[in-house]
Image 1 (spheres, helix red, strand yellow):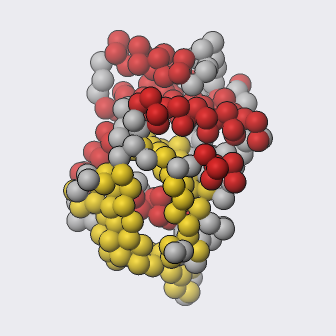
Image 2 (cartoon, one colour; image 1 turned 120 degrees about the vertical axis):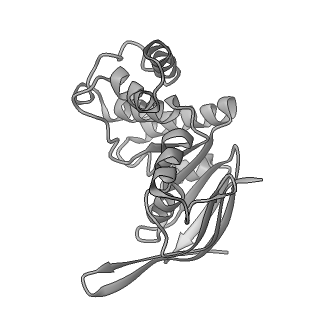
Length: 223
């Protein structure tokens, strides 16, 4: 059974008076434990598709299922619960909270989940160690490199024990060495923890490591 499934997914938005079709007739299945990339040139619809399957946005047409639960007719409260407990996000701009330390940023998702303080702290320290940032727990984002911030973002994404991690252009702001190390880390997490990873990217380095590619062009899947 696929963990994510879409049927004839479409998304249209307006840019002033212009109607822009971002996605058309997207039907795909993502199996649990996959390590796949949605690839294509800028403007192909990669980030839009990632936002839709992550329940951050709603499609104009078609259906999305997460573990066979239809998201397209779910309530806002239900969607928020799915995002909180089942989906981790790694954003291109990191989106760390600048006034919090690395440890506090990683703990934050578990705080919202209502996990007790002791368990929260132990789990946060564990994932920080897993992403290779032991010794950086009390640094704030402004005192860390881009690669270190992105590792904190990955740690935060997996700390809540999600079923799926969605990563939008995760290597875009990193040099090739740091980007490669980050991808190897996420592949290791995929293999050891069984977390499903879905990337949007046009980086050949990410494509090489992905086990499956979904190619988009002009809002449709290339066959």
